[in-house]
Image (tube, rainbow, N blue to C red; front, side):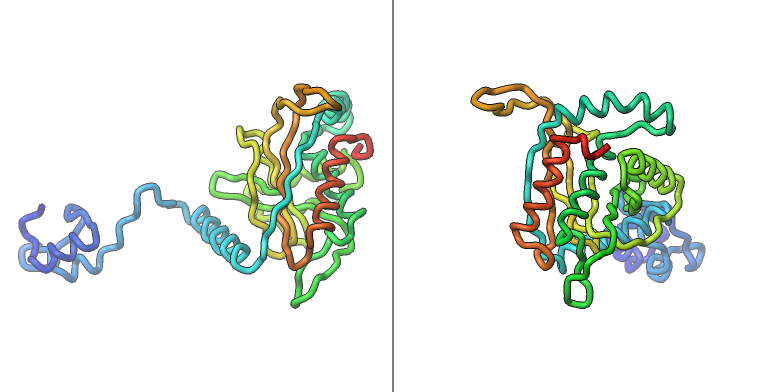
Length: 271
């Protein structure tokens, strides 16, 4: 350690975890005194976020998820989707849609479309908690959790009357937020968080503030399932719906998730 350091300064350096080589002394002959140590900026923890934008996003995520967990009474429902028909339909539609409209439908687009239909058919699911009471929303819209290097954003997708519209809305929203454009706040009851590109089978998600549910989707994988009285190997996907118990009870929540599951297993209406 630097020899020209006062005893009080040495104790302050140890207490604050500072490197004396980074300090400038204001005492006689450049001696480091306690005031120099107390005036120095605190050391940044290893791995701490340096970028101001990233730090602001992490703070926002910390605030909103903590508030959601503290104020929204969550409960969870799960289902497993047999994606045999869904995978085949996507493969059949993708080349033509990409050629004609410049966007290839993803599994996420089918899920968004299924959620939009289910919200329209199950109006109890298209409500949010406002001013100490449930509030119905006029049109179904879906929040889409988009991962970013510094955190995440949840743009709201609207105009989901067809698979092409869902794919176009998803493509436009993800490109926009990844280019740094902050999503516009819009009313929305339900969001989608899809980790299907990872090796995660299932997970639970925190409901975004101002919404009443979020659907967490795991990877599409080959699994053994019962088909009639026999076992078969099918591509399946596991869904977990986080629900605000102030809005939903078990029956309407299960109707919402059940309808999403039905539409993904019999996906022709999604087109």
